[in-house]
Each structure stands twice: as C-alpha cells, then as structure tokens.
Length: 273
Image (tube, rainbow, N blue to C red; front, side, top):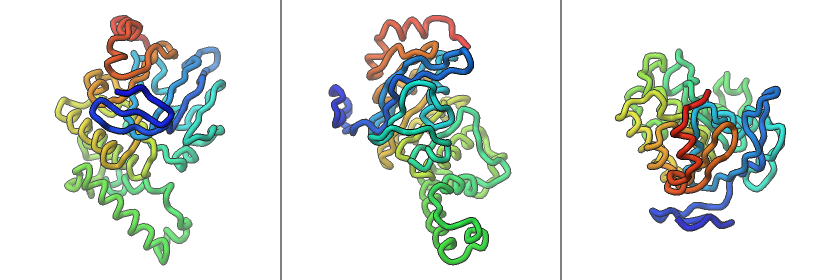
C-alpha cells in the first residue's frame, strides 16, 4: 500500500482510496469520572474499509456511538466531508449520510423483511405524513421509487426468498443480513458495522464477508467496522485502528498492526470488561 496522502492512496490489490471522509480529532469521552475514550485521533477515507479493534472494554462501541452521533464527546472534534460537525441528534447524522447496524440486532420482529428494509428509506422521503398515509399523488410515486430501490438491495443480498417473512421467524444469520439491508437502504456515504459477524457460524461469516466486500466494491460505500474475529479483520480491512483501555495503541495496515508489539501485548493479555 502507498502511504496515505491528502488525495488518498492505492491499496496492495490496486484499489484507489480517496481523500479523508471523516476525521476524529483528539476525541475524549467521559461517563461521570470514567474516561471511555482518551484523546484519540484517526481518519476514515473515501472508499476504504476501516476496522476499529481492541479487547473487550477498549471503547470501540463508544467510538462508534460518537461517529453516529449517539454520544457527544466532551473534548475533541468530529469532521465529516471537510466540515466540523456540531453536536447532532442521531437522525440528523443519518441525514448526512451515515448509517449503521448494531451489535444487538435492532429490527421490528413483527414486520416483514421488506417492511423492515423500507424503514431505512425514511430519511430520504420528501412527502409529508398525511400524503404518505393517503398514499396519493407524489407520495405514491415516491414510495414506488423507494420500493424499487429496496427490491434491488434484496436481490443484491440474496434474500428474495424471505422478503415477505416476518423477521421474528428468521434465523440469526439472516436477521444480520436484513439489518445490513436496512442500513444500505439509507444510501449511506459511510456505513458503520458493529460486530457484523458476532454469533455467526463459519458459513454465515463467509457470506457476510463477501457481502461487505461487495457493498464496498459495487456501491462504493465507505465502511467502518468493529469486529472481534481477527481473521475477518485482517482479510477485509484496508487500515486498522487499535484501541485499549480507551486509548489508541496502533493504527495502520493489517500487516503493520499485526506486528505492533503494543497490539500483541494487548491481545495476549487478559481481556478486560
């Protein structure tokens, strides 16, 4: 990989990665007297797959919650697409083009797969609530267009056979895929994946890895993910930032991180909650 420059870099497999999309500058997050994140800086570049890793309790999910707007850091700045981001509600962040999945699946289990994915289009809908309820005029045309996009995602993720099935009836691996579909329905510039492989068997992990690579390649979506499976991280990621006890202890390519002694020590030590 060429060293990152202001314009981007080229990966070992010849992919072109663009300029900085998001930058975390000296982020510190406290809960009472406890620091969950301490003075961490890193960037996420357009078109890359950026992993955030670390032992249990390292602050990874807290960092993802800062990126998604759920937490507002007490110190530091979040920059997105070249502008400093003020404190925002999560729905405002979503409208900027940031979507996410969750460590614990957050779907509407009584609704069908199709309807769950349609909820991912809500931030893109322009017609008012009354027009949508009456399903008339512009609202009808708009929903038809949104449904066409959802059907495209359903085909892409190979879940046509369950499109009308209530989510509550699905096995765990398929629920994870539906949650990915809902996030993609928002047409994100930046997709945040919180432990997308958690609880999966080997075959399900292989499928999810393939879909993540395809989303990055075919949709051009920038991806930041938290994942405990180091094999998956090293195979998928262009760059990796490593956290431990709320601090950054490594940042670089998978090979650079793998040979970093501080990272080796953190993973060989006892995981901490």
